[in-house]
Amino acid sequence: MSKSIIDVQSLTAVYGSVQALKGVNLKVEKGEIFGLLGPNGAGKTTLLAVVEGLHKPQDGIVHIGGINVQADSTATKRQLGIQLQKTALMDDMTVSELVEVYAALYEVYLTSGQIDKLLARFDLVEKRNTLARRLSGGQQQRLALAVAIANDPQIVLLDEPTSALDPHARRAVWDIVRQLHDEGRTIVLTTHAMEEAEALCGRIAIIDRGEIVACDSPSALIANLQLNSMLKATVELPLDQVRALPSVSHARYTGQHLEMETAKPELTLSALHELASSAGRSVRDVMLRQPNLEDVFLKLTGRALSESN
Ligand SMILES: Nc1ncnc2c1ncn2[C@@H]1O[C@H](COP(=O)(O)OP(=O)(O)O)[C@@H](O)[C@H]1O
Ligand SMILES: [Mg+2]
Image 1 (tube, rainbow, N blue to C red):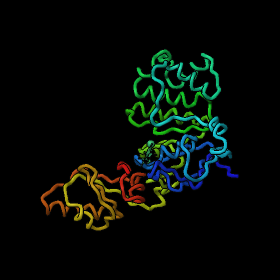
Image 2 (image 1 turned 120 degrees about the vertical axis):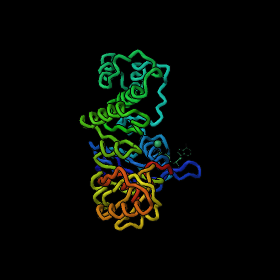
Image 3 (image 1 turned 180 degrees about the horizontal axis):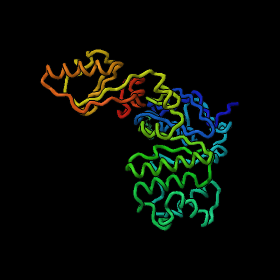
Image 4 (image 1 turned 30 degrees about the vertical axis):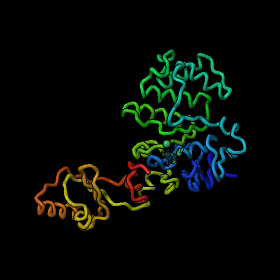
């Protein structure tokens, strides 16, 4: 039997003729923050839904704590705290009623003191009698997290916990995720934001078009591909000419910014200046940056993380 707290083997899942997961293998170890990083449509929500026992796979097996999810979804659900991507919280209920009801779904009956204690962790005590629909985006997301851990689960599954949040609200959620991890819980979260994966996760599976294309720590993912530095500049030049510059292995535009992967940044930069001046253009905002997970994704799939499938 696998020692991993979540063990996904050869998982395939379909919606009609759409193959959402194509033979996914994945092991999550107890106590880690594990990230599923991939663009919209990659299959992240579907993978969580199968693990949660909410979507029946076409093929494959999921074990949680050694128990087969398909065989005993009640036992496995007890270990899980779930925050769905589209939280359909019953918004005509107050904050404290929602926490109470969700805990009761797991046969956990909270006293009002326990509810207040839980809400305090999420900075929601003052909102206890407020209707859920009157909360701000950040407050709703924190409520979704409070609801997810109302049954005191060992494993917390978070589907895009910070999408559509402003940077401040996003950081508040990151802090909560880190606290849940510090308490010894295992966290699996999905994201399409590489900075979120880098900031929170000990290990990451990069998922694209229903397949895991790489799985490791963020630093190992970057190191293993031996990516070069990225030279950035603001300049308008034809891409084919940029790609022909010495030492450039990859070049693309993100908005007005030209990004070039190069093993020899100085050589490339001086050639870029020559090319630009012969075209009567100027090179501005030159920057050199270390490779990141976005570059890993681009290298592995040929597409940017921000593009949908
Ligand atoms: N209910 C559904 N009906 C039909 N197709 C779906 C449904 N849910 C998801 N899909 C498709 O399955 C694929 C994976 O979707 P999803 O798991 O939601 O990806 P992600 O969460 O990474 O954005 C996509 O091609 C998506 O369009
Ligand atoms: Mg999703």
